[in-house]
Structures are given as C-alpha cells and as structure tokens.
Length: 232
Image 1: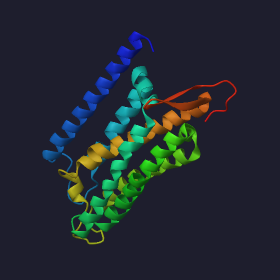
Image 2: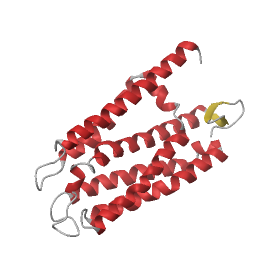
Image 3: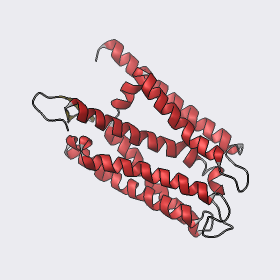
C-alpha cells in the first residue's frame, strides 16, 4: 500500500471510530430521554427503527463509499469474531427473567442464542488461526448466518413480548428493553453485531469468488490470489 493509500485507510478508520462513538452517544441520549418507549400495547416502532436505521446506513455506505467498502472487506476476521464473544452476556437476559423483569418468551431464546454464539466465538477464532482457509468454508458461513438468525429471532420475540398477553406472564413484557440501560442492546449492540456478521460474510464471499488463499502475517490475516490454488 502506498503512502496515500495508508493515509486514506487511516482516515477511514478514524471516521468509523468517530461515527461509532457518536452513534453510542446518540443512543444513550435518546434512551435516557425515553425516545424508544412506544405507546402501551402497540408495536415498538421506535425500537425497530433503532435497530433498522443503523443497518440501512451501513449497507448504503458499503455500496456507495469505496473507502468504507474497502475498510469492511479488509477487516480482521478474528477481531470481529472476538467481539461476538461478548454475546455470552446474554446470560443476563435469563437472570432478568428469573427476577421477573423480562418475559420468558423473549429472555430464553435471546439469552441462549446469544450465549451459543458467544461461547463458540473462541472456537471460530482458533479455527481461523490454525487454518486461515476456514474463512471461506461452510462452517464459518453457517456460524455467521446463525448469529444473524439469533438476533432476528430476539428482536422479533422482543417485539411480541413488548405487548401485554404475549409473555409467559401477562404482567411481564419486554418493556424494560426500551429504557436505559437495556435499550442499548437493541439500539446499539444488536445492529453492531449484525454489521460484524455481514462484514464477515461479505469478506468470505469475496475470498471465495476471487480465488484467494489466506495466511497469517504477524497479527493480521492477509489474503491474496495464488496461481493454481482453488479459492478458499
């Protein structure tokens, strides 16, 4: 990479970092102000917008901004998988169910699904470290798709559970997910986790289609075309 390329890459990383911080700050401010609290008994449209809007911005930026697209397609796959390991914190949903804060309809699927992704993330990192070609394999594909499915199911059940009558107990709904601090889960962490899964899938797709193989160069995973080698 030439000097101008390195400067552009650095600027893109800085811009992404700033946007993430601003996004988190906005989520905190809106959450504190009760912006994500919907009308009683109605679909939680503010929460749904909080989940979908960042994803739409991410996809639009990916398809329209070349520097951001390059940033996404060159991300460290082990780092992205490592961030997913934090989803083991889904155990907290089950704990909140036990204490009568969240309904089981939401807490159990969301909690167990997140824990499953979180506990397997280190195995994915280990597989990438031992065999970089794992990035283009079916297991990596399935793991990322299951990670997205878990989040979709959690948001869907959270939507249903926010309305009286859908929880295990009619008096317990997913309303706490619309207020601080739990609102940061759907308004920030869920879209972020989905973005990381999408970035991993896009990068793996690019490797397969371009006929590239990968190897570790220091702490980074580097991928490039190799003549006569079938794509990973």
